Length: 174
Image (tube, rainbow, N blue to C red; front, side, top):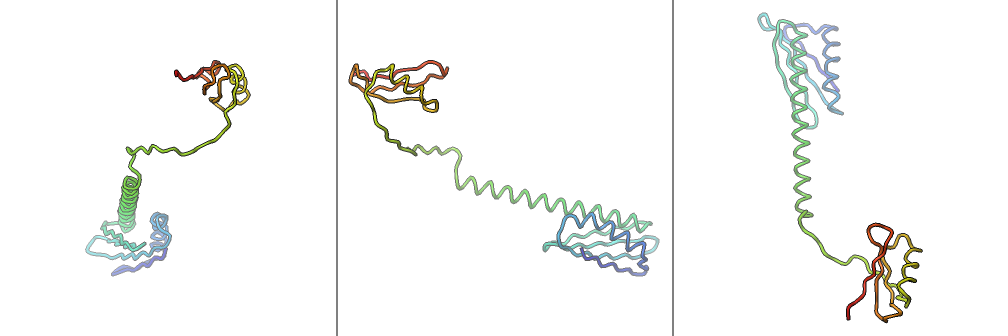
């Protein structure tokens, strides 16, 4: 951060310079590249500190007066830090809201698409329901098996029940 310190009717001592630079580190953590103009002046019995920070196209400014210059600088830093946090929070909220609006427009949540996504072809072999059960047990990842029942000549489906131990048989009526 580039810091320019100017004194009007007040000499900028090395101690004041060091103090301002140390306190500006609190502001510096919010920006990668920023410039600060610090003007300190004396009016009547009050010492006034004015700090102006410009970063990312934005300008933050604080002016306070106190009988102690260091207290005035501290107040300015607190004010600036509050302004910067408020600005960042506002930007983040705007970005979040805008992305939510884009998501709502692109894919409405309530819309359900009912499509066939995958088609598999396999050979249906004639076998007994007992043989079909044994064949299904050989394939632990499969939940069902379609076969031609040798006894009836009709297409049947044998499937695993939810208990994981028993099986169900589906036969056409006619």
